[in-house]
Image (cartoon, rainbow, N blue to C red):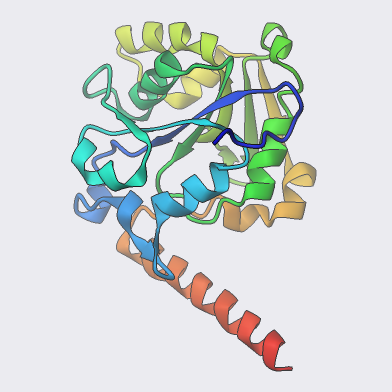
Length: 221
């Protein structure tokens, strides 16, 4: 069934990048970590459902995600890190815009992703900007952002030069930033809380448990 897109006439592809080595997590499959009975990647797919009808997971182990009902695309360029994952996603896209998510962001919400998508405006905006990227206190968040799929050429060229820095790619693009005011209504600090280490995972579980406890308290009051 075709997704109900947030903007009339705007169509966006989407990709979850799940091909990382997770070296700080002992090689664990971070996308499959469970919070409140649901894998992180399933939470992300649910959040993307109202934004895109063209979703894929970029990963080299297709069997691991076979039950998700979405295409799994292997890295087009081996060993190129997140930049290579982004390139793979952009090269595979069917739309003019691509929303790209790192697989270790469990607290992204449908409302926020719809707000991010709304920044594209219309398909012809690809002639004016290349990417829409949130900026938090940590800096730019290039792995929860939207890119014009024409950026595949810039990513491929940078990989060929041996420069795998996402920041270097952004420096070469026309970037529209989403700052504090735009992020504030969506609890911007939680949105970009990632799960890179066992400590991060414990903290994320604690956040979910706290939210569930708060909901129970409100029901019983």
